[in-house]
Length: 188
Image (cartoon, rainbow, N blue to C red; front, side, top):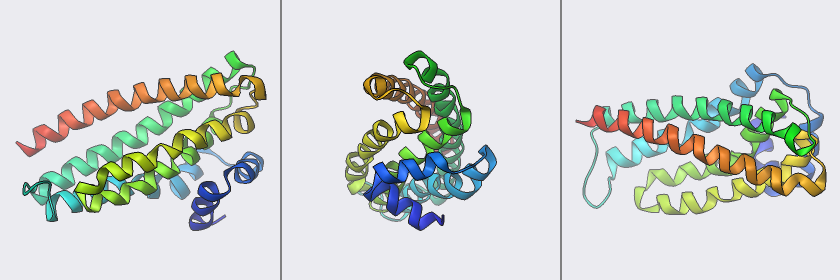
């Protein structure tokens, strides 16, 4: 399935799309090259453009610093997706599901779609809060796909999804902090 159709389907009809995704064969490399790499680039690229051209409250970041920060954010987001997939995969047996890294990567990557697409709000930094609000839909997508992707029984899917969300938020906060620290040093 092409990228545009997949994005549209996971955002608009997630329940049926999760079943389609679960039935597709994939590997880590194809998931990264066909889906994760292009979508994960939206937020850092848009933020770099927005911060260097528009800025926040009259403060603009130099293009070099913005690009440096964007590259670091992009690399860390690619790492975070993989780490979150490992977490999703390893937590699944605890909730009666199966440990499957590829299915875990599908779950994390496709549920992150709303967040990645919302990165476009970074073009106008003052609207970035809207991007954060739209990103909350990714939490629903994770919940909606948890049982289908990881074979977690329906009655345990809420607990599984909550555990993955909490663990993933922890991973993202740690990686965001490291990326921000590196980015701040680049700006100085």
